[in-house]
Image 1 (cartoon, rainbow, N blue to C red):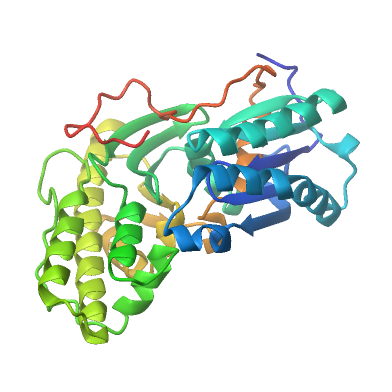
Image 2 (image 1 turned 180 degrees about the vertical axis):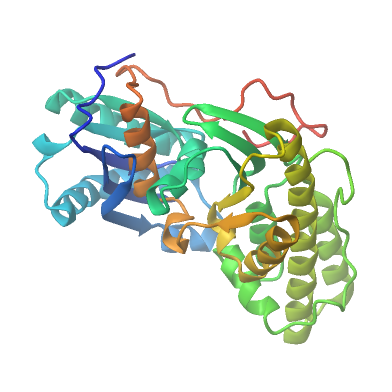
Length: 367
């Protein structure tokens, strides 16, 4: 649905709602006429204490937790932004991919607000929101190569512009964040697993265990982490009962193997990207998603971009994990392009950014 183009001299103010998994979030951003952005508020409530005893996210509990707190978070985001609802230019909410119950909570709330206020509604692809966050944080515009690494998604995409994405690679089984979480659970480290494994790895010997680097050297830019996860399980089983040193060394060796595998796949995607965009295109690597906070991964990517003549762009840690600011910004970018969505826009638990991309060999693809 097309809406009238915004006044070029008038900034856009968008409220964004994020309820796709286990964070409830609301934020307000301003998009200026020159395309630059400003974060006016960003409120996030994590649910980990409610899910911790189950060792992972329980969809029904997550949906109920969103219902319980979303209204309060919206009020807080508007209060922090110093705005009345009438001042908003539009309402954005995550429509997918994600857990269906949580998506419905955010969508119904966002649609209700949009209808009551007579404002445009924007149904946002969660992956697109990650892809566009650097526009808010750095004013970076397309094209660029995106590495998306989170609990549910591991992909390499060329970002050509708002709504225009080309997938170069994806995981054929587990996402990287999922592999971290399952390794943490295996070793009794608790959740969230990524930070727990990273903390243990800092005390460990990353050369003690020679774990595989899945798909290393392959010509396509796909990922695989199931075999690495299985290798960790086998070694851990052989060592039972595990000492603290064993756990630290397992984490360090796992992290080293995972980061090596990611760096190899990113290097492959760089070559593919240059072939598609041409030699004169800017060489920029953007990293988004919760695993982007991992320090070993950041250090390895720093070295990789330096070796290939790229620049590295990573949003602040709080904007790498799920948040409302990225949803609001994606909404503002779409609104600036004259795009909004109907109030019957559906929740989409699976919603690939590049629907034309063929499935990766292996089938367990998160989309």
